[in-house]
Length: 281
Image (tube, rainbow, N blue to C red; front, side, top):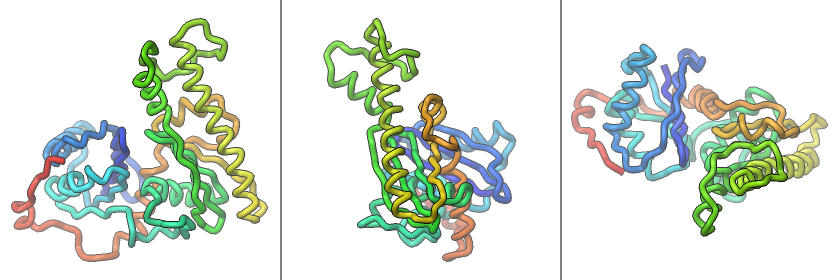
């Protein structure tokens, strides 16, 4: 089995694959202060609940946009699964041609999403990831990653509105059903949710036009949405063709298949196991 970690700023999404098929997935809150032991014990509990055996994990792959937590997850993999994890980053085979001015600046999650979306749907595509930040990525039929846009996510916008104003309360992030609202809470919900929907609609529309001009394949540009907020935010958006919440995990499985035979053996010997230091980061 393959254990995949998608480490985001707000949540860690874990997936277990058996022969390339996703058989289980979980979501947990990202805590920088949590130790490798704490993560290891929590994951073991999740495995036990689903009747999975940690000893059956043959390999581990990690994608992270939180550098401070990477070493903790690496040590979790070594201590509790006896594997040196593959980390998505420079030197990893993806099949993408990255056109960014500095390719190393592209978030690992954006690369993983692009690989998964191109494999599943073909190009050209606009990929919208609605997480802590809302990211937009443009990829061509020829697997060229052109770049994209980054906007504050819905939760960030909500937190900023609460923290930077004196009288506005913290509100639940849900659509109130109207833009003409008669109380403060619904007015805030309307501005936050519908305003973010408008941002998604506009950027996707403009990016699709620019991508079609560059791609020149004649194929229509499709929009794929993913991320924790994808289901809620796309209910009233006309530009999204597919919602695929587990896109990043599937991308990790695809990238693993491209890299699993590269490099030295990743198993950890019993001697090394006893010497592993667990860091609190």
